Length: 501
Image 1 (cartoon, rainbow, N blue to C red):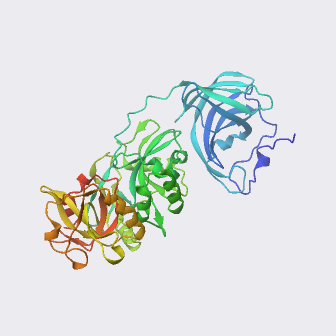
Image 2: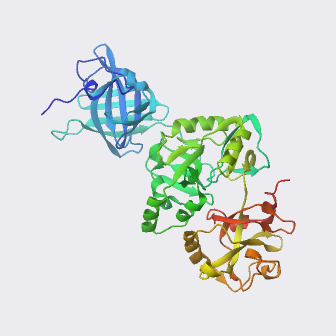
Image 3: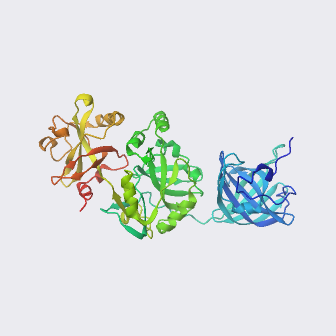
């Protein structure tokens, strides 16, 4: 059998910033070596995610880190045992290492400090060790022991003996905080500013073993976005609730139109197929809960700092970039890049679940509204088998108030997706309080004749230039459906509130 490589032999220190070992007397026996005082758990995003438990022990007079690779991290429930593979001792300085191991090197990938602190040995004998950890996250007593199988001496098992973490805080209300619309951008060092992402809002509730994505209306949409189902593996924590946006990118910008092809899919085969064509990303921008502690009363500035430490970014998991104080400059950049707008957030603000607060403000580069679809006008020419325009409205005291017809902004794919949803809601009863057939003209200035009515259950996102004095949309364009918006929220009052001044 070839001799196992040592720590130094596995690494090229001209390429990696990992510290070299200074002890060459061989690895110590964890069942008999003199214990030190400190421990560290590394989270290692290599070919596969795993965790490394490292206990300080003495090799002669020199402290080293006796190490086990623990694929599933330390167990947090009694009765569960996790595999722990005993690996070569690491230098004591490795305890502070966090960063990137370059591609092509041993263990290439991202390394983060999952936890650190002090420990004490409670029992120690060859092949067995019981210890108490007192870390920021891991607090309790674990027992680790060597398996009895011959030829598998490196394989150990670890189990929880006593969980000494404090009782967790109650979970906050799982509803996102919302921003208030304002007319103009501004500059203020007490505020941060970030892009307004053109996607679907989602709260990611993550445990050590799974992720659940909740829409704004509280629906579980995890299966719709399978590439985000392992979001918890990108987080340096036992559990967390993260606020963010699911976006589909197109030419470097988020595209709600592309995302439309993903939002309402339910068939697993269709989801898998379309996910390859239109991948999505999760853009994180706030943190509500972390390792059993509610953060909703914590100032935004501190929540942002914790979020930066929490997430290990990847191709489909990002943190929303922010600038401090310079909202006007960011707004101009957003406008130049045809982004939806910006969001301003007061650094001292708490998180207010389900509330629309003035500590978060949004400034849009275009006007957009969520409106209820009440029917469609018949199409002509290339659209003879579908529709000419959607008839949309908003609720007021008299019922569903007609605000206009939307005949642009549809791709062939969008119409193919939309038509079955409309046909499933066809009704003989006109949903509008006022009859669109008696109120001006439809698409391209033509009267609306023989419209098809639908039960007002679908919400359309519509971009427009202005709202006329008679309450009609000028130059409306369809942007997509909003499955995460309750039709009852689409009021004429909220539509009017979009208009500057």
